[in-house]
Length: 288
Ligand SMILES: [Zn+2]
Image (cartoon, rainbow, N blue to C red; front, side):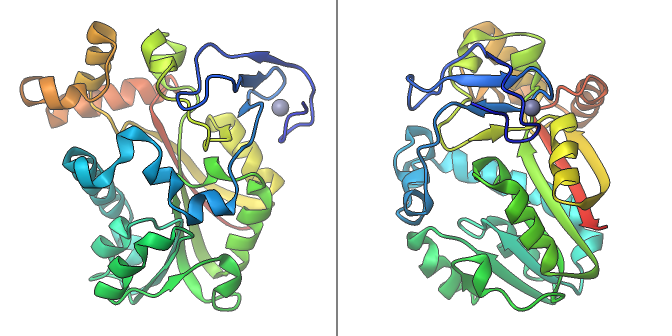
């Protein structure tokens, strides 16, 4: 199996398991460091039918108010980070899911549009008057959008280079493409080497996992200008410590109330960022 990014056939098996399919192996390219699964078993139908949310136990939205809360906070952090860029602008969110980000962006942007395959999200968009497209082919012609966002979407794509090119073609000349992905070099995998986390975090719909280096390479392959690639930490120190102490997720709900605070979070994030080992990457690309 050749590396999607550099074409090398040299890779090694990464420690860990794909949580919903233990037969899939996790590979890491020896040349460029791209992490990828040896089997790609998701297609458009998989997403349209809502399998991403229906099948995975941890994403049963109706029963998991904590998940909804997490997503609210993650989307709020995104809005805080991007607010200056979206005020009075035409915003397109690719892979917009349950419209979590768009609902928060709605009162600031000139226009908002979601692109989402999942069929069951439609009532949310109707209720809040948000235009919903089912594919990029339905988008308004080139040059319409000021900001296109894709939060935790690119790692699901079989052909991310083609999609990045298509996304950028929809931007106007000064438009920006904002990409957020999980970091393949998360400290729990690469520094602490927590076995339980390595058997939890990999998931069959995440076909490729990027680190700062491979995300840069991906953007270069798509002929994009790289404005920045930033390491950010979504989960607080309590989450890390809980993994290390109890081998379980969601430690911020157990220990966060006495451990976490803004100062600690900033220091922890800065430290992890200096090591390239945060849990998340956020990047801004534009037309080169
Ligand atoms: Zn490679």
